[in-house]
Length: 357
Image (cartoon, rainbow, N blue to C red; front, side, top):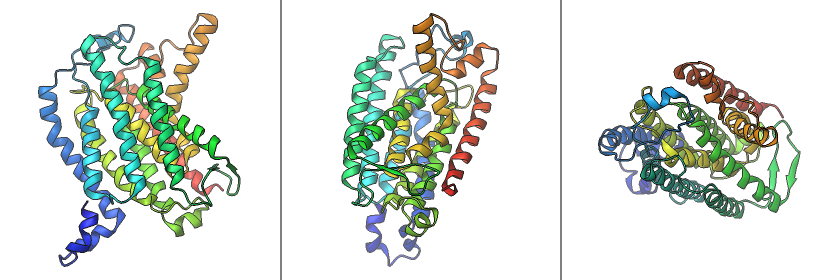
C-alpha cells in the first residue's frame, strides 16, 4: 500500500527508500514482529481453545502440554497479511496469489483446530475432506501462476544441477506443483509437534526462499546464476520478510515451555505458502533440499504407515520421527535444537545448488 503512495510522497525526504525491495522487506519483517508482540498477550489471555494432546504420544506431553491454548497461527497469518499489504506492491499478481493461498490454507487449519478443541480430540476435519480442499486450492493457484508466465518459461519444470535440462509440459507441471504445495503444507503440519520445532526451520526455509525470490526477479543475478528470470517475483521478498517476522513473534511465546501452540491454523498455511513460493520462482526441487527436515518428517510417517500395513510392525517407536527420539529418552529441547541444526545444514546445501549448474 505504501509503495503505491510513493509517487504522492516523493516530496518527503527519505520516501525514495520505498522503491527498494530490500528496505521494504526489512520494514515488513519488523512490522509483522511488532504486530505479533502486540497481539499475542491478549490472544493468549482470552483464548478458550485448548490443544488436545494425543494419548498415544510421549507421556510427558500429557503433563506439560495439556490445556495450552492453540490456534496461535492465526496471529502469524494476520501479522503476515497485514505487513505484506502495508509494504507490498498490491498490483503484483504473484503477491496477491500467495496471500490468497495462505488465507485459504489458514482457514482450513482454523476449522480443523476449532473442531479438535470443540470435541476435545485430535481428529478435526476428515482427512479426505482436508486433502480435497488442499488439492483444489493448490490446483487453482498453480493454474493461475502459469497464466502469468511469459511464453519462454510457461510449462517448463527446471532441475537443480542442470542449466539447460527442463521438462516442458503444462499439464504435468500443474499436477507436480500441486503435489509440491500440498506436500509442503502437510510436511510442516507433521513437523509441528514440539515447542518451536517447526517454527525456526520454517523461518530458515522462508529466508532462503526470500533470497531465491530476489535473485530470480533480478535479471542480472538470474542470468549470472543461469536460472529462470521471473519478472516481478522479487516482490515476494516482502511476503517472506513478513512471514519471518510473524514467526519470530510467535517463537517468543512458543519457546519452551510454550504459552501457545501454532495449531493447524498456522502450520498448514505456512507449509502451503512455502510450497507456493517455490512454485512461483520455479525452485520446487531446491525446496526439497532446503526444507529437508520437513521431507524427513513426512517420509517417516509414510514409511511407518506403509510398513505397519504390510507387516503389522513399526519401523519407529512413534511417527513423526521427532517423537521416536522422545520415546528413546531424548529431552524435548535436545530433539528441537538438533533438528534445528539439521534444518540449517539442509538450507545451506540447498542454497549451494545455485552455483552447481
